[in-house]
Image (cartoon, rainbow, N blue to C red):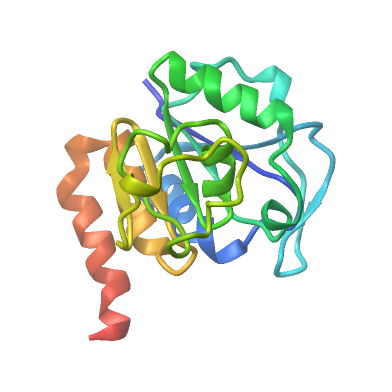
Amino acid sequence: MTRRIVLLMIDRPADWEYGPLVGAAHAWFGIDVVSASIDAAPLTTMGGLSLQPQRRLQELAADDADLWVVPGSPLWDEAPAPAPIVHALRERAARGGAIAGICGGTRALAAAGLLNTRAHTSNEPGYLDAVPGYSGQAHYREQACVSADGIVTAPGTSPVSFAEACLLRVLPEQAEGIAQMRAMFAREFA
């Protein structure tokens, strides 16, 4: 059975936040990676690259894929999370589907109410406070990445920790290979 990760994106996704995850997932672990957006219109990444989402949000079933990932984008800070994304995240979580958000993508998870009762992190304390419906301040953890109850969160400064936690959600039996991936990235800072 092929494992699958869906990247649920809005315009101007932060290239570095999902790059380690999708590169390792596809090239090293054979996971199918699919990009999706509300309307599948072309996106421009923060790095200026053109990205053509492969699927529209309405084409995704709530239980489609092993993990949905919501990357950051400056647009998450500029406006409330789009209602179709919030609804889809709520429905997926209600069905027990794993979801991950990094940087501004955590604002979408907060808007969906997914961070009100479980441990999570984001860019900094208070970053999520302005999100309508967010009441999870007591569950905020100042960590590089938090994985709790099917939800993975990370600040934009932790793309490798995020990739590791996401891969462990999808391929827990590959823990040794995932640790090797993390060690490879860590050599730069040794």
